[in-house]
Amino acid sequence: MSRGQCNVCAHPERGEIDIGLVEGRSKLLMAKHFGISHHSLWRHWYNHVPLAARASMLATRTSYAHVNLEEMRVTETEGLLAHAVEVRRKLDKNAESAEAVGDFRAAVLCYGKILEVLTFIGKLLNQFSGHHAQQVNQLVVSPDYLRLRAALITALQPFPEARAAVARVLRDLETVEVESNGAAQ
Image (cartoon, rainbow, N blue to C red; front, side, top):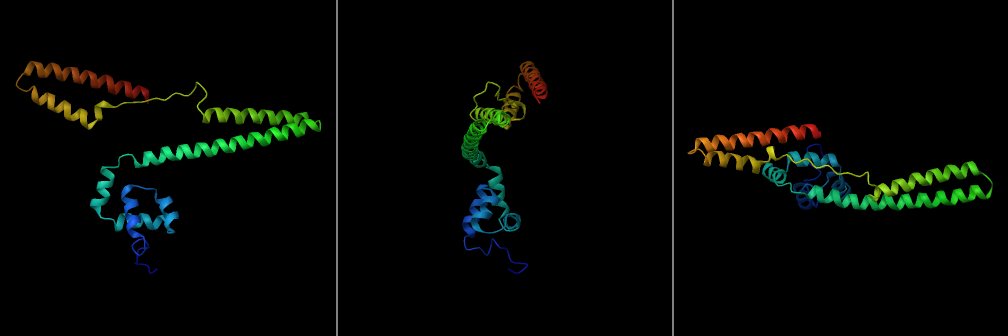
C-alpha cells in the first residue's frame, strides 16, 4: 500500500470494521479477524471515522466491553480450570511413579504442588470464604443526583427556611458520603 492510503479504508470489509469500531469492539481482536494491524485500526479510527460516530459511541458506551469482559472471564476461567485439572492429573501420576520407585522426596514435592493446584482451583471456583466484593457507590458525583439536588434547591427557592434546611441536610449527607468513600479507598 502507498504511504498515504489507509489499509482499513481500502479493506473490502470496511463497513463491518467501522461498525465494530463504533461499537467499541477490541481493536486487537478485530485486527486479527480482518488480517490488518491494530495500528491501522487506531489510525483509521482517529483519522477516518467521523467525529460524530466516535462521540456517539463514547457517549453511549453502555456495557459492550463489560459484556465481552464477562464472556472472557467465563471462557478464561473454564480454560484455566481445565489446565489446572490436567496439571493436577499429571502431578498425581508423577507422585505415584515417584512412590513406586521409592523416591519419596519427589512424591512429597508432587503432593505439595497438588495442594497448590487444588487451592488455585478452589479460588477459581470461589470456594473459599476469603472472597469479598467491595462496592463503593458515589452518589455525590452522579449526574442524576446532581440534577435532583439542583431541582430541589430551585423548587424550594420561595421557601428560604426550608431551602436552607434541605441544603444543610444534603451538605451533611454529601460530606459523610465523601468521607466514607475516602476511607474506603
